[in-house]
Image 1: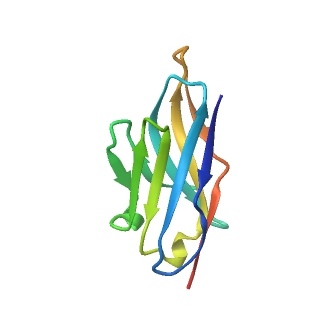
Image 2 (image 1 turned 30 degrees about the vertical axis):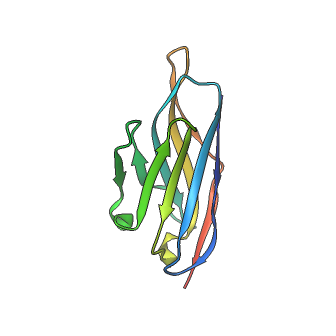
Amino acid sequence: QVQLVESGGGLVQTGGSLRLSCAASGKFFSINAMNWYRQAPGKQRELVATISRDGTPNYTDSVKGRFTISRDNAKNTMYLQMNSLKPEDTAVYYCNANIWTILGISYDAWGQGTQVTVSS
């Protein structure tokens, strides 16, 4: 099984920046697409950004121009640089990855989440 561990969350003022990390460990053959989701209180979990194995990023409209997703395949780690943060970015941020095992089985793994709070 793969473990995904997020880090980098915290409390920041409006306009500030945070950098989230998601490190994968365990036994697997490869990691395909990796994603950042977030869930605010009382709201559904939403996809924030996704990055393919070759590094192609995509973003939800509300974070375009402010967030940057990246990954280091050698370190099995994904990042989310968040700039110009707004109170509406407050949420628990989750790392998600599509994992391929050595047996050719694909499944989605999730991290435990990291809290991001943006004060006004």
